Amino acid sequence: MMSRIHVIGHVNPDTDSIAAAIGYAWLLRERDKADAVACRAGATNPQTTWVLKTLNLEAPMLLTDASPRFESVMRRLDTTTPDSPLREAWTILNRTGGIAPVIHPEDGVPIGLITGLSLFNYLAKLVGPHPRRQEMKIAEILDQPCREACDVGVPRFQSSTRIRDVLNRILREEHIDFLIVDDNGHYLGVCRQRDVLNPPRIRLIMVDHNEPGQALGAVDEAELIEILDHHRLGNMSTHAPIRFSVDVVGSTSTLVSERVEEAGLSAPPQIAGILLAGLLSDTLILTSPTTTDRDRRAAERLARWAFVRNGPLPGETIQSYGQQVLRSGTGLATRDPEEIVSTDLKTYEAGGFNFAIAQAEVTDLLQIDEHLDNLKKALEDLRQRRALDFAMLMVTDVVNNSSRLVMVNAPPVLEDLPYPRQVDGTRLATGVVSRKKQLLPVVLGLLED
Image 1 (cartoon, rainbow, N blue to C red):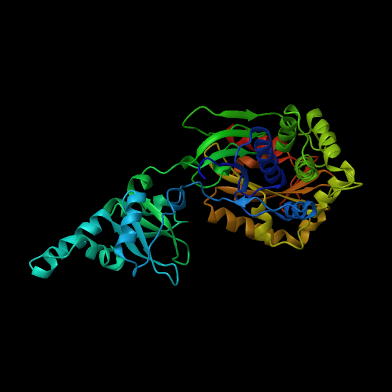
Image 2: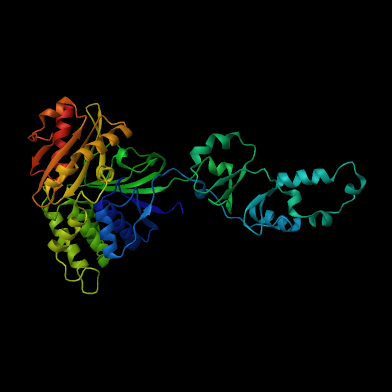
C-alpha cells in the first residue's frame, strides 16, 4: 500500500484541482504502470459535483491527513481460537516469527496474542512445585486450549488511528506487539513496536498548489515526490530532490493534458471531459487574463478527445460545455453563507498578516445585495475560527467579467486598493476575475510595501 502514489490537490478543492488529480493519476497508471490513485483534501463543490455526475465519474478518495496510521504498519497474520489446542498456535508461531493472534470465532473480536513470552510464562506456571505438573509431557501441554497461554493484556489500536497521536503511550508500553482492529473492534492484524516507531511515509504528488498552507494536514510527514502547479511559489521544503513544475498557464489541467500528449496518448472521453471542465472553469471559458495560447490548444485537444459520439458529452462544444460548467457552480441563494465563504478559499501570509481570500461565482453581481449581511457574518466567523488577521470574499460575475469584494477586519493599508468603494462598503473591481493573477498581486503589493 505504501508504494502507492496519492495524487492530490489543495484543501477546499475546485474543479481544476480535482480534474488534475484524476487526470494525472490516470496518466501515471497508463504511461508508467504506477499504482497511482486520485485523492481530494476536502469536499467537492457544487460545480465539481455536477461535472463528476455528468461524466459518471466517482469523486477521488478523501485524504485529509498525510500522517501515517496503524493500517500502514499492520500485518494480517493467521489466527487461532481460544478453545483450539495450543499445538495450532505453535504451528502459527513458527510461521509468523513468534506471534499467534487469538480471535473469538463468533464475532471476530481479538482476545489477545500468544507470543514466545506468553508461552514461556504459561510453561513456568506448569513447571511448579506440584508433582503432577512436573510430570506433564509436551504432547499434553500442546493439547491445552490456547486461552491458557494467551496474553489478554495486549494493547489494541484502531487501524485509522494516527500513530503520532498515541506515540507517547507506545513508548511507555512494555509490550512490543499490538493488535489492530477496525472501528467495531474486529481483528484486522498485528503490528510491532519497531515498525510503529518508523512508519513508512505516504507518497504524494501535489497538483494545483505548492504552498504548505493549502495542502492537506501533516503534509510534512509524507514523502513528497512531485509538484505540478500553475500558481506562485510557496515555501514548501522536501527531504530529497523532487520533480517540481510550476508553469505560466491558466490551469493545471492544461499541464496534465500536455503531458498526456507528450506521452503519445489520448485521454478517454471521461478523463478528457473532466480535464476540460477544470480548464474552462479556471479560465472562465478561456476569457480570464490567466489564459494563454497553450490553454486554448489544450482546450481544443481535450475537446477532440471528449466530444465523441459514444462518450458522455456528444454534440457539445467548448463554449456550450463551458457555460454549463460555470452555471453549475454559480449562485448565492441556494447555498449557505458559511459554504460560500469556505468552499473556494485560500490562505496566505504576507507583510506580517495572515489572511484568506475566498471566491464565489455568480451570473449577476446584484445577487450580493440581499445576502451581504449574512456573507459578512460568515466571513467574520471564518476569520475568527481560523485566527486570521482579515478575510476577503471575491464575488465574481462570470458573465460580465467583474467582481465585488467583501472584506472583514481589513487593515488600513488596504484602503489604497484601486477598486471604487460602493455605498454598502464593498468594492467594485471591474474587469477583475482572477484571484491569482489580478487580485492577489495587488493585495500582496500593498501589504508588503
